[in-house]
Amino acid sequence: MSFTTDKKTMIRRIAEIIIFELKLQEITPEKFNPDLDLVDELGVDSMDLATVVLVLQDEYGISIDEDDYPKLRNVRMIAEYIEQKRAA
Amino acid sequence: MDVKTIPQREKKIRKWKFSELLADQEVRRRWEKVRKYFFLRESTYDMSNRCNIRCNGCYYYEGEKQFAEENGDPEAWRKLMREERARGITYVVLAGAEPSLVPELLKVCYGEMPLGCIATNGFKRIPEAVGYRIHISVWGNDETSLRVRRANNLLSKQIENYQGDPRAVFVYTFTRDNVDEVYEVMDIIAANDCKITFSVFSSPAGYTGTLRHNQDSLNRTRSAMLDILFRYPEQTLFSSYSAVAHTHQSGLHELYGCSYPRRNPSTNIGLGRSFRQYRTDLSWNREAACCVPDTDCDECRHYAAGSAVVTARLYRHVTDPNVFRSWLDYVDTYLAVWVMGYEKGENLCREIIEPPRHLS
Image: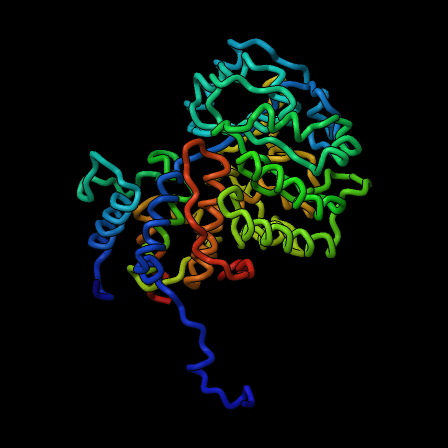
């Protein structure tokens, strides 16, 4: 994925990663609501989130500090976080 | 060579990608094996305020929880278990003071929540209809048990009750005084083909007795753990990293940052959000909630605490192949100890790995 990937593509890719890593069924990246609260509404727990974060780090070549995990509440917030990290 | 002459690029520590760590097929298989259990979400429950023995340094008879009234109503427990399931709890730890004294309640819990564990002194056999893991506490040989726990022939009785029982794991708690006794106990455990794992005595708050560890006893405990693991690999559910994590000079909280509510104010995710510790009257208090309440947090090296706290720090352990292997061994061990039917694999790393600290 190029550095100039737009946010929409990034959101879709993050949704793909979450669906794949958490083995979610009956949901597609296209229909994944980027504002869905991963913890409250999707039931993601700390180990699920840690797994997703590790894959995101690989995918986008960034480092995500464990103290920042609470900022990763939904796919849109994750995309914004990654954008900020890559711009820094 | 003078350190100053080493080129910068050689001094750099390689930064591993997670996908690179998983490229090793043995590691990948173990990762896939353990991650199937990431759905486990625990809470703990005191079942009775009675016990049939009275041990020096007992966690239950400290603090306020010991004074809670006992709720022996099976329907109340059934309702609680259903409510727990509804809020996402998938694993129950039935403990204090002595759960074997309330077998009907254990059956009710098992009927509602199929995954769990019972912490017992093993004096009274728990009915086979209760299909949880059963942790039987061992604090030394029979002579020591009589002195510290005021219980006659305790190990013999425990083995008589649980020999050949696939639910049973004997939990040897190392105190300052019983390190060398583990060999005698282990010979008996192995001769009876029972399984063992290890815990480390973690003083209750305000404890002034003789069981509290010092640096020397922690060092001797680590050596004994590794020696037993080497000598009895079939009977011992443990790993080198488990030994390191639980006998380190620093306690679990200082090493990993305890994620139980008592030390973790965040309710965002994980244990801080979902964990509760119920008293016998079915009340709970977030301020006091941890797996072994009333333990001095600075001294906590308890096996139950580590199972959650070390596991939760996955992201600190993806820095290097051996560090990650050590973490996988730890998690594989904890699942074998706590989950019925989970078979421990061969440990992937025998090296002594220093626990990684917070990364930023």
